[in-house]
Length: 429
Ligand SMILES: [Mn+2]
Image (cartoon, rainbow, N blue to C red; front, side, top):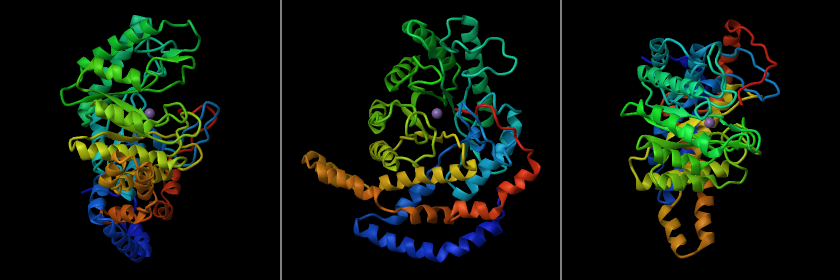
């Protein structure tokens, strides 16, 4: 029996206020989609099946390198974080897994497993951390980790990743995500080839320890914390890594890790076409790696990414990319942001499913640019909220997750038992 953190009576009372309207809206949308030859129930079933992982670090208030302003009732440890994730999963029914970050979430793996299974939650990819120094570690990552000139430092970084795999094996994870901050801040500071050779050697040692049914995802990022050069800076380098390592290695695309205006949907298509697209970190941005809520700035771009994903899905039924949110919540309640972001990712998926792919293809081969682009815009402009809400309702979630969460008073309740966290220092960027 799955434990529910938000009382079912609260969810039911909130749903009761909205259910009649939802049923009318769903029926009306169903009729409209029917005219386009689309069965609304089939779209709803796919949406209900869709899940995006919540990162454990996302439920705490984030920050910038200038400051962090924690909210009330911040999670004290990974077990509080699992409870916050359970709230998101209960109300949205769209987030069935948690992605852990080691060493931040280090705890007895059996306890971790038990804590998550209370809420029927699983664990997504394990995330290693060699971009900051953990207390008491022998070597510092100030001048790099997997690519450092110093062998003892590289060995320590490899060892840490192996530990992440071991923890992951116990809790039922099937993947390791590696992102490093290695690079340089000055022209001439490092030799690019040396650094990349060191990285590949280290990555091969980690890859060799991967269980057969695991995957390793490597994540590229253009810059920051290194500001002149970064070792794994773009999808090209990332593709080389995945090719060099082998069949269990895939590229992970974080939407915020590219230069402004880069055509990310095209990167998605390229990596998938050559079998190396592993998954996503969803967020949104305006200027750089802003880690804003998914779909909050440029929902059309998120839709275009999903348009590619659905296109791949139609050609390859086995295609199962890993979906995770990766955002920093600096001015909102993280649970609220994550619920809305999960819905927005789901929304883009639903809209992409509405694209008439036959008509799109016909327009493309006829060189009818306007008809082709209209196919996309038509799908994007369709308000699919009734589909998302109905999928939530039928699975025991909330028609309106935000209103239901606020009505539950969850944050005030946990604030009573979780002591206030001091602000001031930099947050997770
Ligand atoms: Mn990321």
